Length: 239
Length: 218
Image 1 (tube, each protein chain N blue to C red):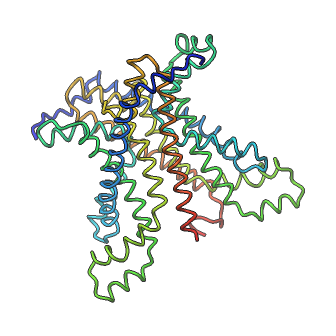
Image 2 (image 1 turned 120 degrees about the horizontal axis):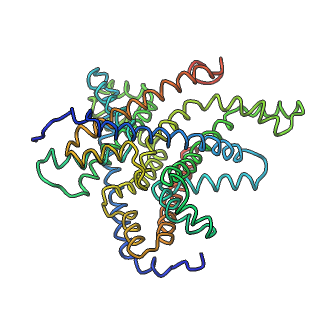
Image 3 (image 1 turned 180 degrees about the vertical axis):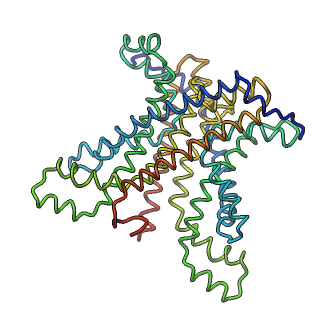
């Protein structure tokens, strides 16, 4: 294996800036999509547990649809197909005037996709709340909305912090798929550096190290959150 | 929407079928390879040999924190370099998937192996079986049985993941759909059709998981 090492290449201004801007896009796509996925996923997850059958069916359909189609296909549909399917004026706007089309599309695609996974965690969380609590709420005369607001959601959201952590880490990794529609995020930038300089080893190592740092940082943050939100004496690690 | 062109899909079916075969074949081989390597990783982590366990854990955590696309790029770059000659895209992709999935499979295996009660191992030792015999005849068969539903789920995820070979233009189902979409200028039809095919296969897979889970519960 003969290979010319040149780690200095990573710190040349041009390539260093590429990595930095790639990191910027990765973080902004992941965080924006997370906000969307968390909001929508919570609604859909709650929707799967309500008594109304129609709402339940619709929410289940949402989860099955978005979970069983690869993210890459979804990304392409949002980017290439949706502008053709919406009314003409809107399609024209999406193709011509929408600011940052790659970024917006990536966030939408990743957001809708991750929402289906978040919804599953939220549903599982609500279902692990003991049935007795629900019955107790009813016997106290709480309405359905009140039961969710004061009993089910506060407990279940604190229970699902660990599985949510892994979804949160996954969204950073999945944001790399944005490169398929031309967004130069971290993976794309490292690939570009490899192509320009033939220093693939250094370029991919840089991206790998940065991703590992993101994962470590996110894990630490989520562990702090977990410690902060833990329900003392409730099921979990110590119980 | 009125000018949805079914003809373009029908005309390209043989080409797409070739792509789908590659996707399925890649999935199948990656599951076999990933399971084999993943089992070794899991055994290494549970071996009680400190260095071995440490290295295996490091590998698993490293792979699990980087995106699959980056892993694919890595192996497209590394495999030819390590062998000193160009190799086909399929081999590089397969190695990338095996190395990547093994990390996930090893976590599943580890949980599965730990679900087999310690008494079983002790009974094996008392009967005079060696380490590998205990794993081969006692621990792994029971562990596998407990893990079948989650292994199938992971297989579905892997099948979806194979679409990512698109980034290195390997002609799987996704790349084939995209080639037709571009050359025929029929993006809407082809990508919706691709979504439909993936959905049908993966949904059927998740029904199978539900059936398996139901059967295990009894």
